Length: 157
Image (cartoon, rainbow, N blue to C red; front, side):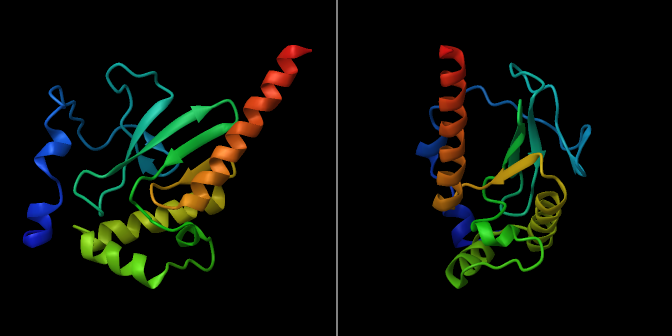
């Protein structure tokens, strides 16, 4: 997408400090219906880059395998937790308008949201979260703190 927003989307100051970019081609081994890039340089194989184009050209999520299943940080692939409701997806009017304004590929963005919704419906071992939903983040953080406290109590015995 060209124009005012595209030219001002990222500021040089956001990227000036980063000198050693690593680029990865799309594709790779499948991961629950998504193409995944494995063997990310310097990272263990339990960390995967999941292509989720649409919001931006190279937008990706990050999947991390844990002892309790998978975490998938979907980044900006969606903005509001109710968008991932399996049967009645919903988004606030303001966030819906913002996503539409900022998207670079509407069909890809909507397709990836649908695939994420299906993943959320079909896989109980994958915990999905995005960059912009504070309630979703808090629920995940509270769950993480609860697990940490349980582990600490178990280690003290």
